[in-house]
Structures are given as C-alpha cells and as structure tokens.
Image (cartoon, rainbow, N blue to C red; front, side, top):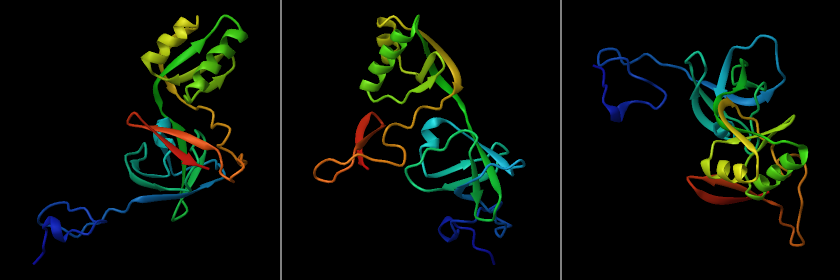
Length: 193
C-alpha cells in the first residue's frame, strides 16, 4: 500500500495524485556565479528586491522551479550568469518594475536631486542624464518640489551598489566596518560590514 498523507511526504517530493505517489520533481539549484556563455539553459527574470537575496525559491521564465543558493551579500545584475549544481547555466535578467524616472533641466539640478535621494539612503540607478528609483509617491513629491521632472514607468531597475558594496571597506577606530542600511517591511535594519 502507498501512504499519501501530508505527514509522510518527503520535502523533495510532490504528489501527483492519491494513486501515484512516487513521481519526483527535481529542482534546479543555482549555486554560483559564472562567466557569461553564448547558450544558456534558461533565464531567471527577477526584480531588484529579489536580486538582492542569496536564498530564494523561484521559477525560471520557462516555469521550471529553481532555488538560489549563492554567496551572501552580492547583488545579482542583469546579464550575469549562474551555474547550477549539475553544471547548467542560467542568465539573470532584471525584470521590469514600477520606477520613477527623474530628469532635470541641467546637471546641477540632477546632482542636487541625487544628493537628496542619497541623503535618504534610497537605492538609485544613475544613467546618462537621468536617475531612477523604485516608485514612491513621497519621494516623487519631494523631487517635484526640487524642480525635477518625475515620470512613472515600468522598466528594469539597476541601482548603484553603494560605497560599501564592493571589495573595500572603511573601519572606524574600534575596527568596526561601515553599516549598510536595509529596509524591510518599513523597518530599518543595520548590517555591519
């Protein structure tokens, strides 16, 4: 007899029906970054907030289930490739998401807008003559008050990684590194580098 109760199901197995309980579905496990290749197995389309995570259960564009288990602290960028446990390569793409596209009449005003966004620790994409942030009506109103033109749109979002996101760090006299601010569910959390 076959036991199909929820309590007896292995975590890696999905039951197709109460009659046939032995069919397994394997999950693609992406474990490391790799050099881009011409032909990839699949595409992983993620918005910025999910590309910041190193542990994630998701799906490829094809619908295939995948698990992300990469090094912590690194942001996935559009165009990067990931290798799975079995050697398959998947390309990461930045998903279009709701953003605010900010332009100004001159470079001084654009720099001023960037300063005020940075002062609020907001992830900012910096482009040729524009800034882009995640949609936020409060910040949009602030930028309009500074004289910027703010256009809401759906576009891939690739903000700067920040001064502490790379290979160097700053230490204070006690040997502590800089603190990176992360916001989750409206709460500010600090991570020591």
